[in-house]
Picture 1: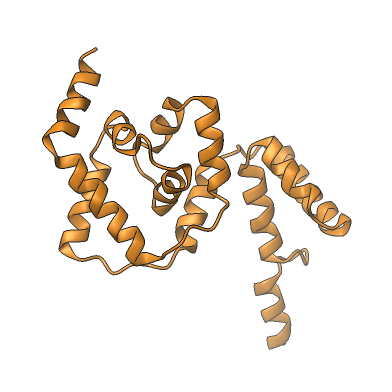
Picture 2: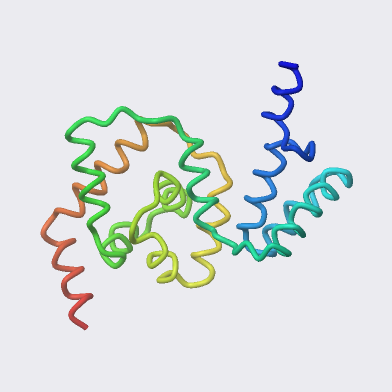
Length: 181
């Protein structure tokens, strides 16, 4: 009996593994071309399984929500120890406008931008990506799948450095001038 209960925990009542359901939900949240690209790389059996679940999501009218992907990536990251100084840096960045962040990230590699966006759900993330031209946006999106060196310490350093730069007078005046236009 305990074995059957464990199986129902790992699989839904219909026998579909929870991991497969999560994968379908994540695929559903992707842009159609990204979803298709990923599906083409799977075995025919796995593609058929996910295809049936994707059809069910579409039939139920479940909306595509790209925040699911971003949140899932954030959950997959190990929790970092937050010091008061680090907390201030995160808060400083979170309070910036998309224009100020764009100025801070000007000239930075797409991988660094993707790394920053994957750290958490920033209030300015969507506006930042919309401010980029199509080529820059695509480079950032493509870089999101690439491994970036470092870990929690590199993330903390990156946030601290960007927060420090955001508080510099020239960054603030550049954003003010940009908002005045």
